Image (cartoon, helix red, strand yellow):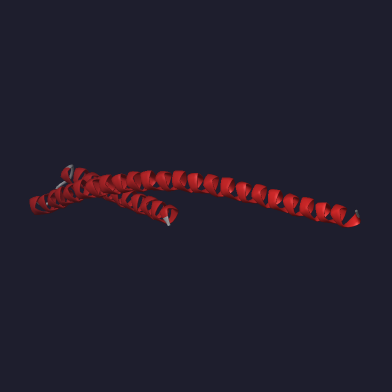
Length: 127
């Protein structure tokens, strides 16, 4: 479960980063378009429209950066949670292994005691 949550948070982070990169690329394209149009005769309204859209993209980029930061924090939280779960799992496995080893040792002792008792009875019966 913790592994799935960690993997899901990594997927979300990757998605947020991809969206941020797309916004940056789109902003770069519009910035180049604005630069090209401003170097040739263009209506001022078109230049304002491009500049307004670039400002809109700047706002979206800021929001997306916040989304990336939130996703990074979530990944870190999931990583800590996963690490804790892995430690718990290791402790549990060690305890289980020790318990199994103790059970087997006790079973061997019981079996040996039973065999000793059987041998003692046979020896007593032969006399």
